[in-house]
Image (cartoon, rainbow over all chains, first blue to last red; front, side, top):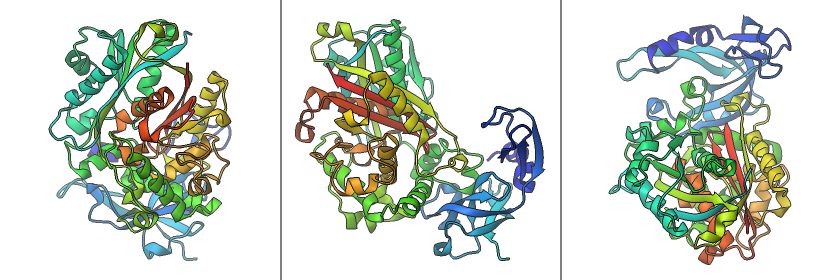
Length: 131
Length: 384
């Protein structure tokens, strides 16, 4: 991904900045300009709590070229405790042990790089929540 | 609105067409459709193509194809809705004729996917997903449908064998379609033991990379007698969208764009699911056919898997699905798929489908889908 494009998303990828609709309370990650539930246009931005649960998952064994060095890897949809859902790799757990309902937390990790000598992209990956 | 009919169809064998260019592939199918209808000039043309820029470094297909088809100066446009681009082109042509703007309109679809390598093709297709919030994590299309499959299996008990049964059925149908890319039988064991792609989906759960085109000619229904072949009436058209990211949907086990588009098409046609004699649906992955068959109302939620296993969707079953072989066997040149579904329905409703003919078919439904269900088109055709 070109550098300016990843730079614009720093508030989300680094701090998990989300937005809650001031009218109906629905939370969005990433923030939007219009609420898709009530059409409200006023939002309060907040940093999401990093905890959530696995809603569904898979193991990517045939990746795109950009992720060829990482396969196989687990990937899932995470229901965040603060409301939004997002897609994340699930790491630090044996691939076959990922389960629906598994509690996870998002950690700040290296995600990919722009080609062999390009800028490293950071972001979130989910790890099992051990508490 | 005027009533509209399909009066000509054209499609050549799909596959890895190394020796032919994008424009040649399209023009060959367009000429077959024009010859089938017996027309030499078009009022307008709509071309479904997902991303000719990424696949072949050529945009502006509206002009390229009008030029190479010998249709100087006609209004011609490429339309895009990811893998539903062909269905969208058909709807644009339907609306054009229905509105009274033009009398003879071609709806076509084209994708030339083998000019780039497999990794680049995977990337080109992935642009139909939410690139920033799904793609950044390494999501692939098999991965998105795999996550739907896991959710569906968890909620309804859909089995690995039921997914495989979709591929077995569609490959069997494809053996009877001379234009299909992969005309070979597969077995449940063969599918389950094929190379893993994104668990639980294997390579034989996935539609292939394909070069191909398809074209149909639409005219006002009251003009059908002027042409040489029997017309097939377009009685329903629906088009709907859904969230671009799969993770933003509350229910991962259904496809609301499909349901919404189907409801529009059922309402326009004054038909419902029980009136459908055969359906061509978007089986980009085996799980997709199961979820789509439920989302169209052909089966109750959770019953799509058992239905395919019981043969209800086979040729000779209660509601044959993908008699053509589907995307799975026929191939999936993404922009062409939605138009090829109309080609199959037209031939079935004319009684021209040969060994895979659904006997007595009078009403057919085509469902085409973009991305992980971010868009869907549904059309219903009937014998005139």
